[in-house]
Length: 387
Image (cartoon, rainbow, N blue to C red; front, side):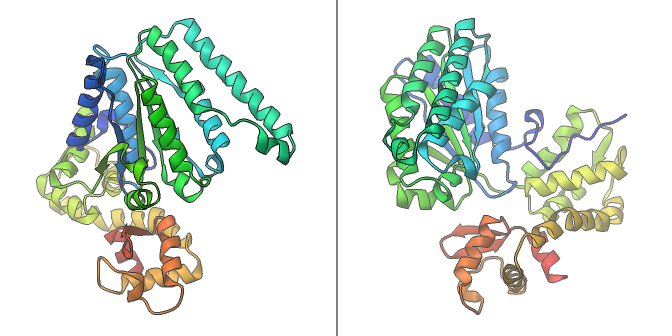
């Protein structure tokens, strides 16, 4: 029975990852340079892009590169740490949760000796004991206690890793914007200080962060030295070549006997605007109704209304229902402006800027830059105009 490799509700499996050659090449060469040259420090990386564009998938691809493509020449240690608002409230909770992720979710290119595993377990006990003791203190005493030192713990860990053959440790922090929107005052400065201190200690940690495109100018304004620590890459929608690879690569790898004609690929590219989430969603539905043979443009046009209808039902209805009544009105007005890019001043009424910001946080609007927005996708705009 033929499976369905297209799955849009989570990260793309590394073997199906498409496009982004420049970013993958930079990451691979960055790791190699840091490992092969003793005095070379790795460049940290910031991956920016809007919802569904493939930021988390890229982190999983990086992990795959480290532990599969480079395993013959690089001994790597890695962890992916997905942020959420609840772990960004203060420095100690952030540090505790990061270290907990390291202790539970790390990956290595080589088997670690027992004492490395023991070190991680010992650190986990220290963190747990610190948490218990911290909770038991009164608020006044808690404020006077020494904060967890991320630098101390990661330096100790690096020393053990290096002594056991690890060449580089990659820490990937997904959704860094929560530190800006939900984090403690000075969170970016604290993290910058820790990253710089780790580099000064001679460790070889490579930090990778992800976040929405609009967050970088705001981070630059609030903590300009933080942004200078990272090589920035912005993920955009696929071009036609990228769309073709995203469609054909899973079919070829899984030996699915479906031939998608070039004019159908062009149609999918036009409908989706090259957005990875919508490409994957449409291909998943195509394989449910057309598993073999040649998918011609005529056949595609026959099933196209059902594909668009399912997207509307499974995605856009839920998106629209996330909005309050006031936000829904803004969305409808934006859709009927007839412009792809617009600003709060294009909509009559009060408090429009705040409503636009709330809609951007819900991924219903895309904040392109300060004061300039678009709807999350042209298909969403089409759905709103038909309500």
